[in-house]
Length: 83
Image 1 (cartoon, rainbow, N blue to C red):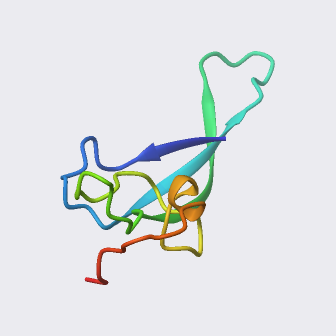
Image 2: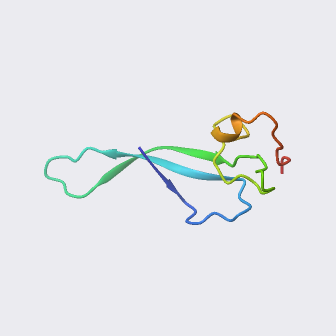
Image 3: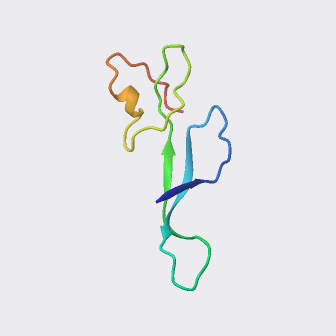
């Protein structure tokens, strides 16, 4: 399965974006090229953690959580307030 984002470059202040997920279809005999089937649309949230350097973490948040995998393991965590 692949992910194709509609935004080529996200701005530094991105908070959430929508993407489409596609699955590569097996090649049918007699057909050429690569074909993909739409699977789903997904909302991707950004990690809300503040890094040690004082910036906003650029990683994708774990689904249904406010932080990424790295910051989910952190003990003392400062989060960026909800927008």
